[in-house]
Length: 296
Length: 313
Image 1: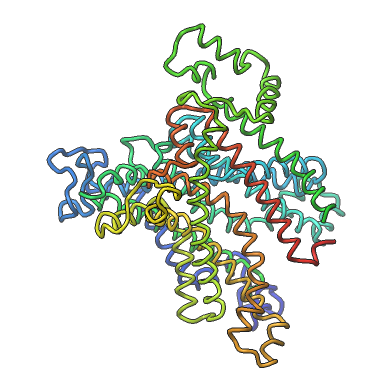
Image 2 (image 1 turned 45 degrees about the vertical axis):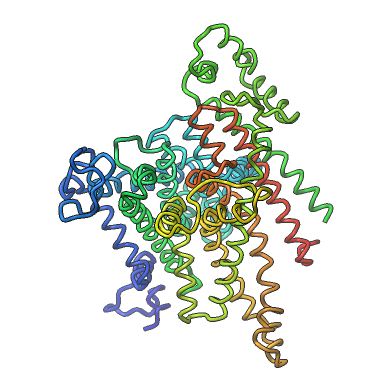
């Protein structure tokens, strides 16, 4: 029995299960080693963030003046920082700030960008032209420079950094949703839904939006990677997570001053950012291939 | 071409209008009375009142906006609160440093990115292809400020080959200037090289499968000639215009790179301004970067049309 028959359910016997698009995408995603590795690393970081108090060897803010800038040892696996805090404990707790910032800022961008993109793509005309130019204007401001400016004017904090990153990411989702909606709204099944008298909101939500979701899922995954780097960058500059709360970006900021005597302070938080971003990029790339109809 | 240019310029007007609205609105995000924030440590009511009058803060918002735009159009981006110098002259002073850094970064990005992209496409599915793809993924996923710190540790602290920080103008001593710029330029160019590599690879793969390349091969041309003379020329056109569009990434990256390597450029200017609550400078930097990005976008579009005759009509 060919894959096409399974997809359409045409010719499938009682013993054969008709594969849903989601199941097919999952199967194709899990065939990619890179994506599986990415999913594993993400799961690991999520688990670390969730059970941080249970597995962390020390309190991340506990300053031990007798153990200042100690090299990695059996007692402190990743060493200690300039005020004697355990680097491993801070890397584990830092996962919370980074993952939270990645997910929340992309959620803000999705919540604002998707409805606006649907309206622009579906309604068109003046509304589309207006938001199109606003989107162009936001995209003209370099991402990090606008995020820095927003975080500076809003005031330095993790919450404001997430808002700043969310706002600067929103135009990408407006553009993507708009383009997808414009492609889908001319399909026959949407015409049919309109012909049987469905209201516009129902057509947009029930018939168009579900078909836009795969592209949004890919972009959201890649945007989380970008948001994690952006949060680390803002925290590195002192505009994100405020001390003494742990964050990978702010850990790198203080590590920079002790590079000669305590290089381990810079290695681990940087490696954590790299792994988290790599994982989301691998899953994003894998999802794009798994959801791409051309690669079937 | 002229019609296209006219249309594109007309489209720019609303975009520039919204850019100005966004930058003007930043000031409105300040919690509390902007005059108080701008006054900083100064608490003299007369000074605060003077600031309010000087920046028209006592007027309604649309009027304030009109005054601000008028100032911008006449080249007045305000004055730095801290240095007491016009913002425009500060930007003029710092921009050449960033341009020098960015130019070197783009050269590095083009050499590595385009080179790796071509090799990866020509040797598709070979070990070279996997190495190049791995490099691209590494480049996209590595935070450039971490890469900068690690390179300082390796080349400055451990090996002592390159200076860890500082800037020497090229006019003073080009060798020392190059030595101080090469590490930050590599850090900055690394992420763009990764993006360029991916685009070059896919453009080259597409071109290598086209009929005219097949014809060139059928004529018995050497493979090197087919790749360098026939395929590469067409594949690189969109890649080079993409280089112009990566300007935003470059400036965003420059903010962190200049901070790590203590380079007194445009990026360091905005970070210092943020910490000194020098809001006019922050607004000025965002305005100049956005306007430059829009101008480069236009130039990239025009370049694309110039080299692709099919798009001219």
